[in-house]
Image 1: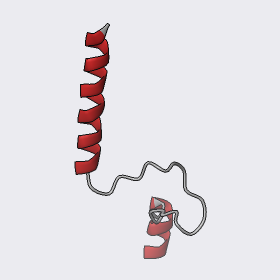
Image 2: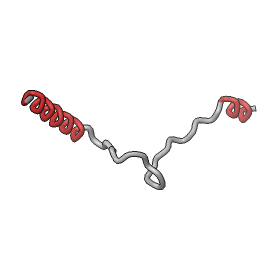
Image 3: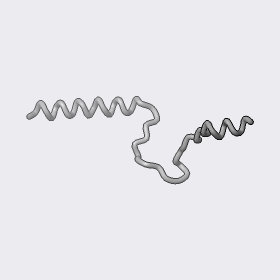
Image 4: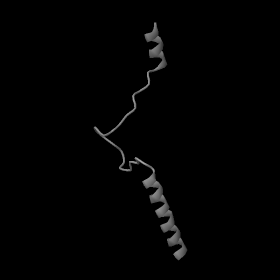
Length: 53
């Protein structure tokens, strides 16, 4: 039983170490409002073709 607890503690410590070294990791969940960042949508190929005429 103590081996399971020791293994969990080692794994949890390793996971926390890797997350702290990962840089800008946001684990706060889904964003709504001004702090949400969205990539601009890519134009559809039909719209690009008709604009080129």
